[in-house]
Image (cartoon, rainbow, N blue to C red):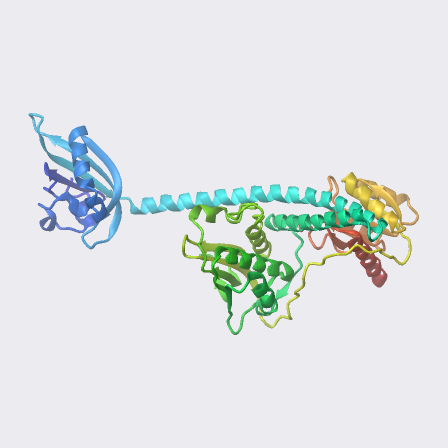
Length: 505
């Protein structure tokens, strides 16, 4: 029976650990025929490291003392290849209780171990995905509420700024506050980017042109110690994403690379066309992509840092030197664009950050490249006073928006829900414009837009939101206004909404 078993290596050892018998399973698993191995010491099957550590003798001594030892470890076949073995060694005594040898049973568990490791990796990936989703929901919610607060502060400061003398000390303090609000708004945009709830203006973007246009800015920002190299193929496909956000992402990655190379070094920006299938490591949908990468020669990251790199507010930089939102913003942009962010790094060997973005054919038009608008507070003039209905469930936002509109000469009706807005519109003889928030309990702003388009198709609408979750077809017929907005943004949106309706009429 023992001779016929092939799934297990079953053999005897003498009291000194030399092989005394050998079955077919041992020959199959370890590769030795009986005449090649009988008489050899059991340490033959151990790795050199285990032999140097005295593990074979330790196992035999433990089996002799305790009667049995069970272990798992790497073993070596005749051809030098390694396999994972589960081993049981039993002590054999004669009738007088004297040790005469050992019975050893080994099984090749390499496949089971690999399967278990793959399962652990899948569980860890699922855990990381669930954690990222939870953090994203929390971050998105915080950013949305923070946007509303910033907008209230910004609008109050704007109105104060307009009414203070040019040389007033208070005016300088107000302008400091406005600068702080702009910084806060930038932070919320990065938070929303991580949560994949930022407003993207998706277009065909030519990466080669985009990088060429920002190269000089990169050189000035990174300093003379960093040498920038670009590697692009002759025919690189365009990608589908937001050009401004991609610029910001590249700048974030470049600054991170510079900080990782305090003594300078090579920074490489490269891209290539890739067609991936279902087995690709990125786990993206099969199709055509562009892999845009930023590689540095810096210190690199250890495994623990690498796992946390895209979490918002995680940073290895000193206090005041980083927000911890750079990589999380890049991660959010890649995911929201239908791609993936992949970071490859090891301690002491630099870092390579890859943005995988869906591609389109390269004959597309030139990219839409721009820079964020820094609004200045100036008196806003509108063609004529309007009768405006404003809807927002946040009373602070509602009140300050109404105050700004009234200051511009408009008549305003302030309402806290979409349902109230519909009732007012039914009973008002003349309403020139509807301004509504999107994220409201009950009926959302997008649903209100849809209903108004059906019942009052000539009414101009401005839809304000800090989110990107509104389906395009639900917001058709409305001018989008991103939060937080200032007086100039609001006036511009009103003018556009009125002009668009005039053209349609």
